[in-house]
Length: 207
Image (cartoon, rainbow, N blue to C red; front, top):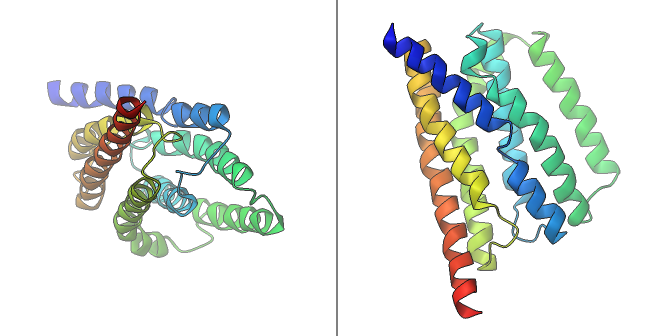
């Protein structure tokens, strides 16, 4: 009983923090007006992962508190992708067509027009997709040797909320697939945060 109450409390904290998860990153982009150190491939992979996991949890009827952060983060992800496309000068008809295709597929998953078994197949792929998105972002920072447009706060919140989810998922469903995804995501989010802070500290020291 106490553990379940703790899990519910951590779920609320996680959801609350996810309301601002991408906000620091969005503000960094608006101030810098540059997305040079942001990996477009990385955030698109994140978008795929969040969309599939939202649909997976929803269609399986899991407690809304155990995955509400996904749709919340998705709304912020849309804004982030728009800004990155804008600052990379990639807002064109292909991005519009991609948006239309994304909407059609997402609605089909939610309404189960696409059989739920497809989500069961895709969900395990979200771990390597999530890992890939973060590795790509790490590589983008390493290549640029600069992290001015990357927000360490965003990645700290990401690491923290992933860790809290390990506990809440264990209490709610103990879904091994979800647990593995959150553990690996927490490690990589912390790595990106550390990398961004390292390059920022080096830049300050050089100045």
